[in-house]
Amino acid sequence: MAAKPPATPGHGDGNIHVRLQPTRVVDGMIEDGYTGNYEVICPACGDSDRLDYLTAPPEVQAIRSLYGSPRRVQAAAEHHAGYRTQLTRLYGLG
Image (cartoon, rainbow, N blue to C red):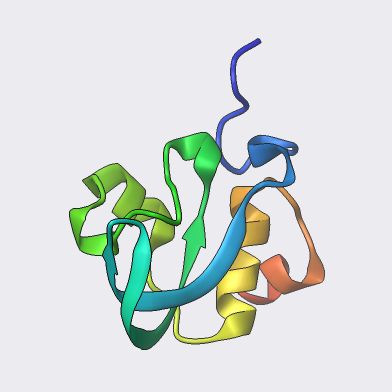
């Protein structure tokens, strides 16, 4: 069965998560703290939290994006997973 496309209910099978963006990821380990931005990580789209944002492929960078607030990144993650919630509507995503 083919994976469901982004913004379709069930995309990512519940594995999409958010995190503070590390300043650097070296050999899969976070170094030098965090940037203060948040990002969406979606393994179903080929992403891994072991990848550094700057070395990730452009299509992965586009999914991660960079968000300045926890509520905004949570809305983006919910939208990416195909959920339509009050939070996604608040940010114009669904």
